[in-house]
Image 1 (cartoon, rainbow, N blue to C red):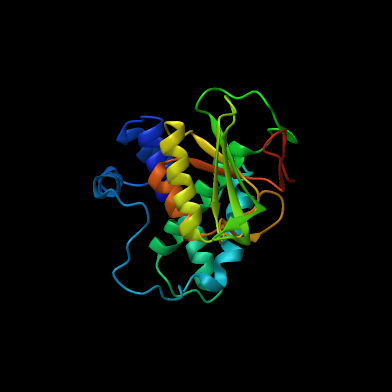
Image 2: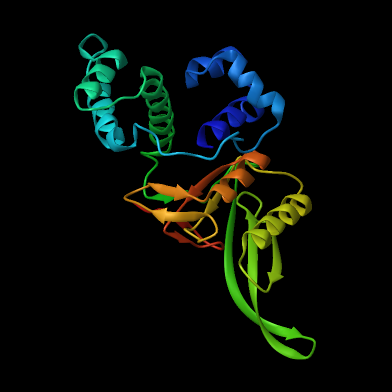
Length: 245
């Protein structure tokens, strides 16, 4: 899912040629064309997902890849050597599984490096179309003469400060998607990235630093609208945005 997001962003946002996307992702040009031509926003699998033979060795392989990335090119072990070393430890899978894991690991690492070193605070000065902020709050109103608690969806453009509020009874994925659809419709377009706190409809698990396990339904929405999602520990819609980490 994350790789599909990268492909769509590089092509639809940054207008890069297929050849350059292939170079950055390690995928073949035919594979990239297939994803783009299909219009898919989330991968489709012909069979149910099954445990991979590589799962018990994933942590060790990720550690090897991280160690080798810090060495000069001549000193690094090749993927074939890593596959052979895993086989010695009991791995019975193919080299292709190891190569696919390495591609995904490098893509995730590249995205992480692109978002680090930006400082503690996201600046209040934004370019037009650069970002929007989204958050929920609670308020009360009357519905059919009965005092009712509402979940208020806030979506605000970071540059112009133009905003939209919509009231819902629940904070579900359907309400989240509806709020974004109306927000982009009313505000006149989709910025390059959205800034969120760690709301439960977007983040399944918060790890160390910037590590997030993003909800797949939320990620499918970002793929559809082609924007990146930044997550913070604290989000102040009328002031600064304080990042975690």
